Image 1 (tube, rainbow, N blue to C red):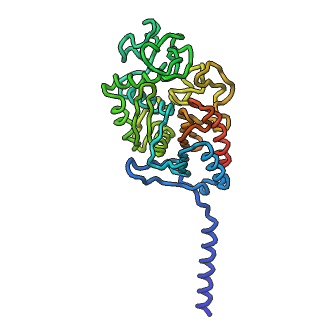
Image 2 (cartoon, rainbow, N blue to C red; image 1 turned 90 degrees about the horizontal axis):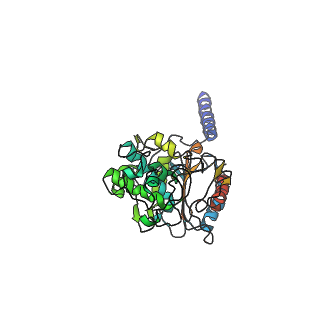
Image 3 (spheres, one colour; image 1 turned 180 degrees about the vertical axis):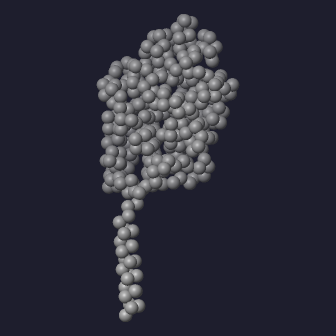
Length: 356
């Protein structure tokens, strides 16, 4: 009888422990994770662990497929929550960043500054030979590296082809914001300052340090970076960590904070080639109109982003420890955009249905 009592006690204890274990919630790891620089291993976490509305995920995926998306990723604390590929695209397929790649140039310029190769407050003429524009010399000498980073050079933005004859005077540097390809001159500035070709310097100081794969296509008109989706996500993770990768500060945190905050008064929604959400007003490419309100109303107010033509998107949301990548063709081929578009707001409505 005594043995039976002991056995019954043990069985009840096991049942009680099992029930308690069932009640213990599975919580996600909130430490910041960085994938290894080589190999395909990458830690994951699930939407269920994060408490997301999993019933809305299929609607998001359907929307993405309908809007000509090639790939879509969400990272939280560096871990993959969603990784989807559409229309024959794969994890190894390269795709163009378009103007989202401006942010790669921004970070590379910051690295050159921390290595004392340049100072963004210096004149561009200190790095490029005098007469690099088709402007009066006194106007050319007003243009700083910071002006190129903030789209406030005062150079004409009418032509996308950045050649000497097209670099004409419109306004004094710092007095006018205009989105244009003139930023590409930063590539020449970085190359001159580092005494190297730009891609070699970029690969050594940025790409290889965070395990990116990809290449620059230096065409006659456009300077475009190409990579797979995970490489864009790696750069997003670097941005989320304010320029840090694992234990190394790749680019100075103060510079990175400057990059992702308002850089001038004309367009408060623009930093150093980064787009900023949650500001009181914004401007868009190809216009001098100023629009009231946030750049992407449905997105978190602290979000900053790399945005490129045909709806290439890299969203960084510090408050949610989140990185989101969208690559593909234009969501609306009949109304393509150079950077931000109505697709941003529509996409965020679908994302919010999942994550909120």
